[in-house]
Amino acid sequence: MTKGSMSARSVVLVTGASAGIGRATAERLHQSGRTIIGASRRMAPGVAWQQVPMDVDDDASVADGMAKIIEEHGGIDALVTCAGWGLAGPVETTPIDEARAQMETNFFGTVRCVTAALPSLRQRSGRIIVISSIGGLLGLPFQAYYSASKFALEGWAEALAWEVKPFHVDVTLVEPGNFHTDFTGSRRRVTSRSDDPYDEACQRAISTMEADEQGGAGPERVAEVIDRLLVARRPPRRRSVGPAGERLGSFTKRILPNRLFEAASASSLGV
Ligand SMILES: NC(=O)c1ccc[n+]([C@@H]2O[C@H](COP(=O)([O-])OP(=O)(O)OC[C@H]3O[C@@H](n4cnc5c(N)ncnc54)[C@H](OP(=O)(O)O)[C@@H]3O)[C@@H](O)[C@H]2O)c1
Image 1 (tube, rainbow, N blue to C red):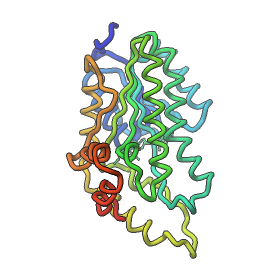
Image 2: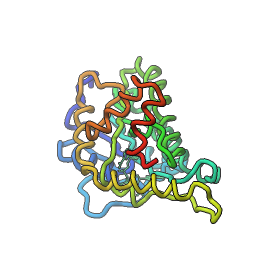
Image 3: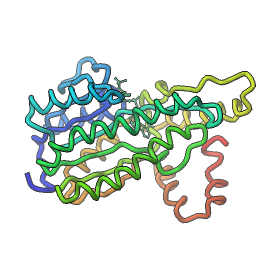
């Protein structure tokens, strides 16, 4: 297959395919005739694509899952990394092991999947779509470790893109705004202490942001964007997706002085 000619018969591995953005992506790509392998810890009932159990936190689980996929399909043409979750809590009172768990899935989980897939992707001029977030461009209050995990992906994927370019492997960061998925319900909260000085502010900010998630569009819109990126002749390094106001946030952050930007965005973040 030549660069930019990913066909409908392509083999695509989607992580985090049991729910939300990953599931909608697997469904859309399956409908368009591709061979889809969905990887997650839970198996989604009643889906038409192949599912492989995979815990992206676990080296052996990723290696085993990838080995099975390569054995069965001979390789993959694209990888879409959707596996992830959110941690809510103040920086000061978040135990390090909870912060580490957030990085383990969102950052190192993506690293594990991408590095395991690259030997195959290099042979097929493949594509990598990394699901980042608007929280990977703007630091979200009381979601600092979530933002840190996505900021980490932003820099890492940018560096990776240089390294794999000679092999005609393309890397795109997709940065969704708020979408209605299981993400809100799966968010882990740091246990608050009775003397926590941030408690009230944290509750207010998180409920403001959760209301936006719950009021967001369904994940099918993100799936549609990913579908187009897989066939784009020259896929962009970054693609934001979501309501105009949310997408504008990363642009205004670049052009406004920080204090002005922070004053303008405070109320939408509940701070
Ligand atoms: N929804 C939003 O507003 C939004 C906005 C920006 C970015 N995002 C990003 O989009 C991605 C998908 O989120 P979503 O909204 O679709 O949430 P979701 O509905 O909760 O889906 C999360 C998926 O990740 C999988 N997952 C979590 N931990 C995993 C692990 N250790 N190993 C394998 N799979 C794991 C879950 O599957 P199992 O539990 O079965 O393993 C599930 O399939 C995340 O990276 C999130 O940060 C979401």
